[in-house]
Image (cartoon, rainbow, N blue to C red; front, top):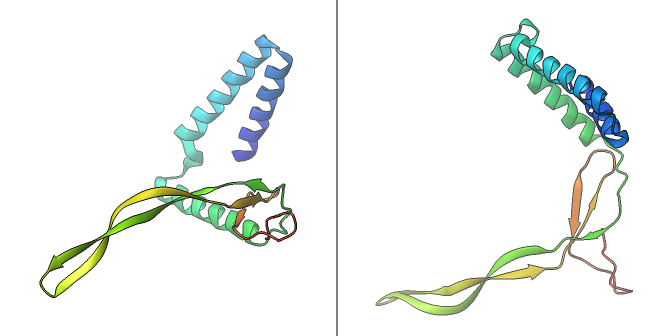
Length: 137
């Protein structure tokens, strides 16, 4: 079904691109009818069988992603916001005392990311090289 969905979405995208209105509505109705039929019939499977089938498909996709020979795209600056404590106050009674932060503020940490063109896996780094401060992966 995923193949048909991608096929119809690709056709719809191209038809919108060239503004052929009559064919767009025809393909949209075909696509929605196909989705309705697949949701209703589900190939004669009950929900438990469908769940097992989807879990197998998910495991297959995970295996493919794990064995991907990554082809990394361009490096993008992708800062990370973290909470950092400020000011400390003494809390407790008698000899049982400790320090707690008075509050937290958002601090932006420098971070860069790259996304694999094949599988969509993302990797991050906070390290830079001394020359030109390029990110190190």
